[in-house]
Amino acid sequence: MSEHHEKPEISPAARRFIIALCVLAAVLVALEFIIHRHAYFTTEGQPLFFAVYGFIAFIVVVAGGVGLRKLVMRDIDYYDQGERDE
Image 1 (cartoon, rainbow, N blue to C red):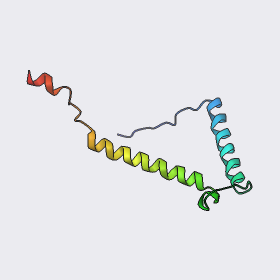
Image 2 (spheres, rainbow, N blue to C red):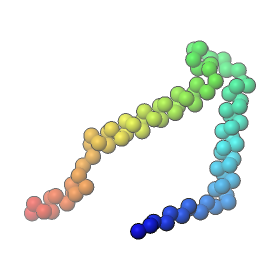
Image 3 (tube, rainbow, N blue to C red):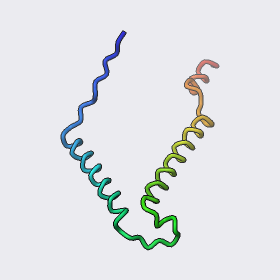
Image 4 (cartoon, one colour):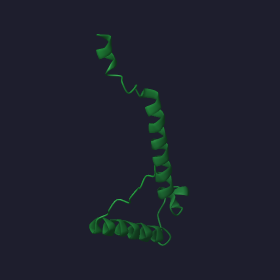
């Protein structure tokens, strides 16, 4: 049995919004190499430091959430078990 997956339709307004976000991101990346920062530490003066730091923090939070889910997740029928015991 072959499954046919179609791409979801994106409205023109959503497409323009995504393009605007990509252009904004490209402009901000270019400005990272042009604008001088008055950094307190040497590492925060490096170009793209905050982007890389934020991305790594995001990955750590997501990985922590996955680990926490495995630790505290209950069985699918957890709430139905009480009805069977009656």
